[in-house]
Image 1 (cartoon, helix red, strand yellow):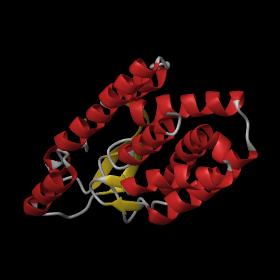
Image 2 (image 1 turned 180 degrees about the horizontal axis):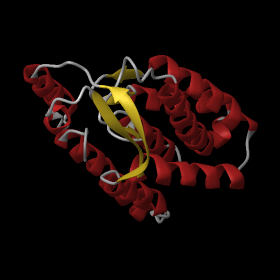
Image 3 (image 1 turned 60 degrees about the horizontal axis):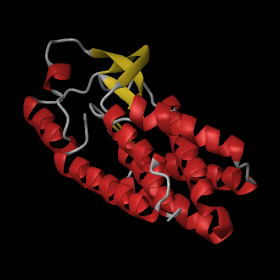
Length: 217
């Protein structure tokens, strides 16, 4: 998966298998574990939705290679050639945006709760405040942000913490990331592709889902 290290992927799969084993032994539904597994598999698929002209950073190849190592993503092809601007692809990730967003909307419709709106608003603000746009890479959201929804839901609605954390966390982070995207100045910042729910934010989304599902146990 682009932008996710092999060690992180192995850890995520480990949690999925452990969770599935616990649910199976307890006689509970393994659908939540299947959702996590499908999310990981679908995380390799980006769906382009539009293009945008953006500034191309004047990086040396040494800097590009360093960024590749730090972010676990291939960037050298993006910086080859003499073009001064990127024809940036704006996309959504199937596993990091489409599937979690649809699941969150379904849960929110089946189990409406005012706390989901309140915590969702907090998550939008928190995402917008902590997200960073890195030239050449895209939007980066800290993975620890995925812990905040379950903490807030446990404090506000302990009886429905799992559902509220899932809905508010996923929707709040994704809307916050879209807000960050809208605030980017294409004349001063840029990268070859920006994927909502992709490399820079997938971990926060996945941790949100994982902790919410663990709260059901």
